[in-house]
Amino acid sequence: MSTVISPVTEEVVATVPAASAEETDEALARAQAAFTTWRAVAPGDRARLLRRFATLVDEHIEELAQLEVSNSGHTIGNARWEAGNVRDVLAYYSAAPERLSGQQIPVSGGVAATFHEPLGVVGVIVPWNFPMPIAGWGFAPALAAGNTVVLKPAELTPLTAVRLAELGLDAGLPEGVFTVLPGKGSVVGERFVTHPAVRKICFTGSTEVGRRIMAGCAEQVKRLTLELGGKSANIVFADADLEKAAAAAPTGVFDNAGQDCCARSRLLVQRPVYDRFLGLLEQAVAAFRVTDPADESAEMGPLISAAQRTSVASYVDDAEVAFRGTAPDGKGFWYPPTVLLATSSEERHWREEIFGPVVSVLPFDDEDEAVRLANDTEYGLSGSIWTRDLGRALRVSRGVETGNLSVNSNSSVRYSTPFGGVKQSGLGRELGPDAAAAFTDVKTVFFSSE
Ligand code: NAD
Image (cartoon, rainbow, N blue to C red; front, side, top):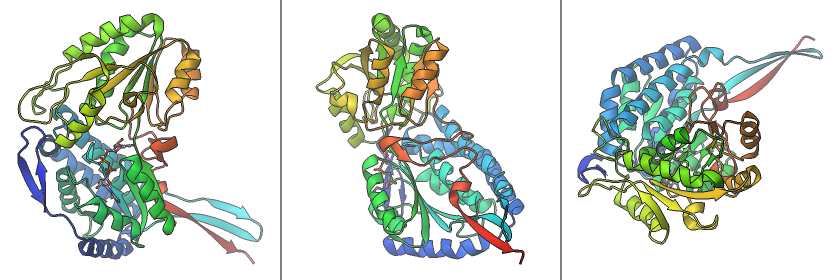
């Protein structure tokens, strides 16, 4: 059993069984058995079941959102969006089964046809920062392509995933097609990697664990996507709409209390507007509302755990604080939004992923320097460019080594576009029109006309 603690009250909200290695093997055997029938379900019928699943999620948005508020301390506004994202991702990929057609290729002596064959059992391993969306990005396209799915939520945040699996069953998914197995990474997660029935791993989490999983998958040449850490740059040029950029910057980094792989945690501001921008940012940070996440007006809640708060604070202790927002006192793992001044690009808070509501600011002189500083990191997940110059937006977008960029916006994820990182931020892409096909292998069959 593991206990689930509310980050707001610090009280136990639930106890959840933690699967053992034997229970994991049993679940994998059931998923493997279910694959034989699930892959044979006609594409139109699989699509119908996924649409029904989406409808049930839609009917339970409020329940799922409230569960996430109490388990993870997400603001109620964010939690509703996250549950809605699961619905939308299911609806989007419900169209995939009927679109997964192959090719017919005339060749010498006959014709060749290609088929998208499902892989088998897919293991999805989810972190604690976005329990619902990240689960959905894995399980929806995998199921659509005819795979069965075993999913391990993070130890700290299992509740919404467990509920989603129940809704899947209620929607009519056959037993064993979608299984949620709460438990430890070192037990359940590792078994997904080592068990030969699991043919693909979708891992989202830290770069450190991702590396280890990649090495494990190599043993069986297991397919793999990795969505890992980030230290994304938010680049503000002097010609930008500074009011708009400053107003958007707090959400770009403090959303979900900064526990966001896409957080724009390095703020690069062109020197001529540096002071003015910081003035505008100070007002925006002061107005950023950190309060009980169940409150409809909350823009930020607490951190996930006491350990996370200690880790975040360790980056601030010896840094130069420009200014901070406010956070409640008393119970709860609160930490105020904090703006740090970087004196060089070598400081620890500038280089490492903090995963908390902390942003570091550094001035730059010209376009080349901005691109060089943005790329001076092992990560490459997300980022933003603020400018009114279209040519510059294009040049800098092409120059910054990252998987996802926004121009004059801090948004990162859309279910209809590919999402993922470069360098040590990940491998492969999730979401977008090709995601279901990524859960298949292409088989080529030659038909002789002789
Ligand atoms: P983590 O790596 O500690 O854990 C992630 C998941 O992996 C958990 O479910 C955990 O139980 C499991 N796990 C741990 N050890 C394992 C092992 N040996 N084998 C198999 N599974 C194992 O990460 P976290 O602390 O939960 O999440 C924070 C990290 O996730 C941050 O670095 C963040 O940037 C990253 N993240 C990335 C994305 C993205 O899309 N790129 C999205 C969200 C979070």
